[in-house]
Length: 250
Image (tube, rainbow, N blue to C red; front, side, top):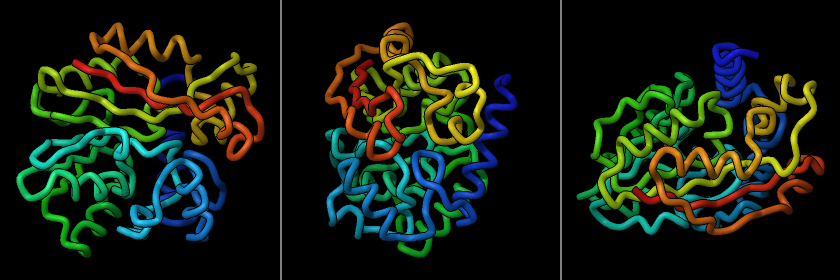
């Protein structure tokens, strides 16, 4: 599957998720049942207070809680790669306060529109959502203090470009906090070309060492914060993968 087809497949899946017409679980899908979304979110590290803050933005996606890792402080400019319905952006907005700003970037128009609607409804004035590709960010160079991303970079065909773009937009000393799926064993060819596994954050994932090397090659210093192998059983039917949480510093 070429890069164009990968993006088309991912956009289609996330459009369905944004409009509530998708009914499966794991990274690229959600459940119309809010209790299922809450259960998944709790398993991957969100508190009850966080889940109750903006419940309509919590689609039960992700594989971690990067806002909890990010050491976000008042006045920071925060960028969320693959912001979806804006759940992590809204949590970050409370931390940056009136003097800070949160920018969410997502390539799915339906997700961006959903996030904008939730922001308007709930009065979030320090959050902005932009339609764009995380391989070519619509963000000025050297303007971001903290980047967060939750189970999205695995969906990008050119992960090297994503990390190079992250390096470009970060300020000197800026930090990136990522929760993502990485493989512990190679997938079979039929798994790599499975649309459901692609939108479910598996088929496009890299082996862990390859993923870490691409971050370092972009010029960022990497530190592994934690690794969650249990997610393989709770969300991915025993596939040889894990959720890795990393800090990358410019």
